[in-house]
Length: 80
Image 1 (cartoon, rainbow, N blue to C red):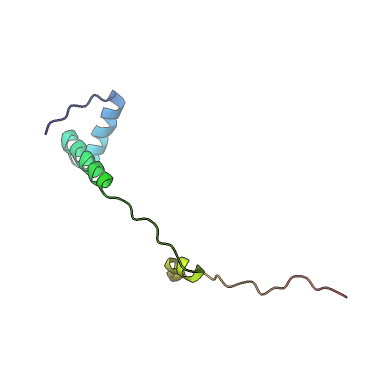
Image 2 (tube, rainbow, N blue to C red; image 1 turned 135 degrees about the vertical axis):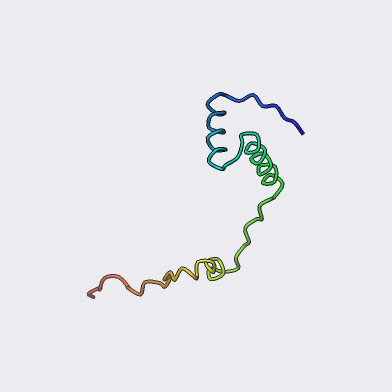
């Protein structure tokens, strides 16, 4: 398929710069960008799962060794 695009010169320069950085020609690089965009649009993101409780909600963070323990400090002393 052949597609003709009219783009601004500065966009064309940036596209050429990025293509060179990837070791591709401008045409091949633009085609790869279009293919990636078409594929990304066809892949629907999965909705976030609902957690049953706080432990399940924070389960993905378990490997980070975060301390979610409640502060046992009861506050300041009260003189009655």
